[in-house]
Amino acid sequence: MSDETPICSAKGCRAAAVWVLAWNNPKIHTPERRKTWLACEEHREHLSQFLGVRGMLKEVVTLPEWESRAGES
Image 1: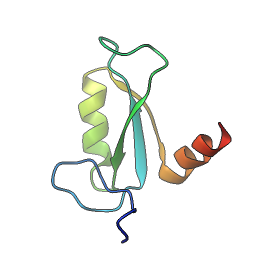
Image 2: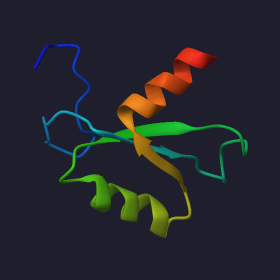
Image 3: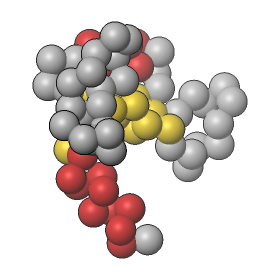
């Protein structure tokens, strides 16, 4: 793993990210705004549930798919 390898956003996790969890807090963000957390396979479900329970999870996609979208804009 290089210094530029994206890592999981779960506290204390240093595993390579595989997933992007796109979210926004409707209390403070405009509807189109997207913040992101990165997740490894092990933490994807936990982080998704955390955001989902709060009504903030908008989308979960693979990291390569997210990066290809970013390259299109």
